[in-house]
Length: 383
Image 1 (spheres, one colour):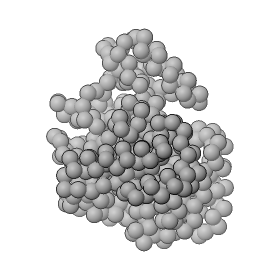
Image 2: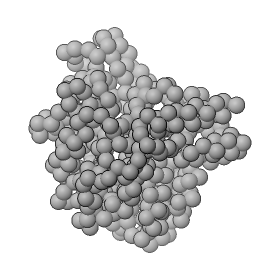
Image 3: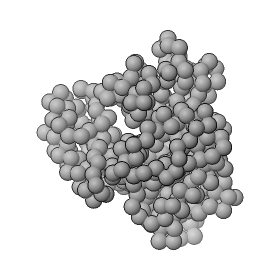
Image 4: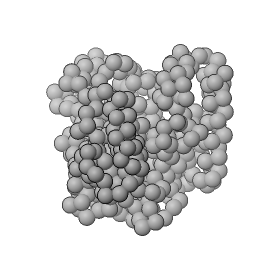
């Protein structure tokens, strides 16, 4: 089965598909060494590509056709989930684009959650409202990854947060931003596989957010540890299965939570493969790509999946502009890394460089191994 994955970063998806015996093709922004190793062919997204531009769809469709392969399916990844592929003759293994667009808009999602009576932070009508209380979170309505998220503890910080985001991303307007009640707690996520009839939670994951030894960005997504070992795991699974079915989502789906003392609150919904793919597979033994494909045939895994081990992935971000020369890469590859950059790849400040993967008997063991390898790799990058 020939499958093309399109996303900003596709390595974990195509490597999962390759392990399951699929013939994988990829269009992504990095074309890392391990992405290429897992694919029959790859193409790199243009560096100047603006995902919000009306011309982007035509550019991507031309790239798809240029493979000149009789594809069996297309799987959209991060950034391309809602793209219209209807002009192409191949099956698209994804949720309905209208459903995707609705849940990816966090403001619209908050209204849907309220109607369903599901717990979530309060969202204000716009960023110019006066909050009932501080702190608040300012974030893009649609962008993910947390890199543009800002916390404000008073009115002046609120104004500065909005201006900072708009200054760092000129394509945003004030209407592209939202203001949300800030929730203290532990970030977690539930990974699911869904068919048109049912959704099954396959794992609950701890999220690594704004980890100081990985990034300078306070709320940047930095990876996962599976399984999540805190409270409310079963409740999060039940909420996620109900919500995924209500939203009509299919295949691989992720629901992000903040776990508070009073229980879990839903933060966002990811209607695509998530960054936790590696850790879920390593911890449970499931192949998520194969499960995603089979979900569109009505076949689902049986819950609960047995946790075999703890598994972690962390993402190392560049503190400053960093070039990956051949010797640096040789030293880095002595560690358990994935998302291996091409020689001479230049990571701009606050851009992702590589990922570290580890497994162990428990969360503490995995976390310490991730930290040790990450600190070693950062030292190598500074040489």
